[in-house]
Length: 145
Image (cartoon, rainbow, N blue to C red):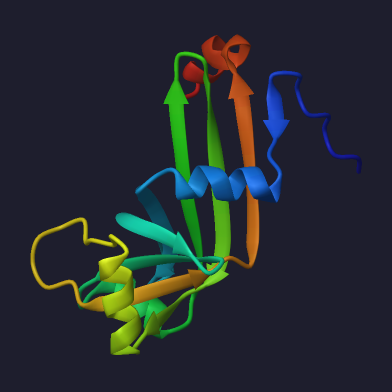
């Protein structure tokens, strides 16, 4: 079965473009399975060393990371001129090296919620894909959003 043709208003992004978009944002969403159900949670993140990094507390995100779960990480933007979306797939884990936690905090990584967030999670970028759409598609796409 042949794959459908990509519409003119949709452009597939290169790996380099995907990384540029990821580095230009701070808020993303991490998706994983918990007790056979999908979970998607927002996180403030940083891209460094071909990986996504974020801080969390004890709970669902940490449980998934400690279990070395395959997770999806998504970042997107929608504007008048069009928009884009980037998806990363990787196997999460907790970084326990305290010096690495300090380095990431010094580099500007902060938690997105108040309280103690002293567990550093990393998602090595094992797969990355992205797409950008133009303003011509805006009326078509907003009908689906």
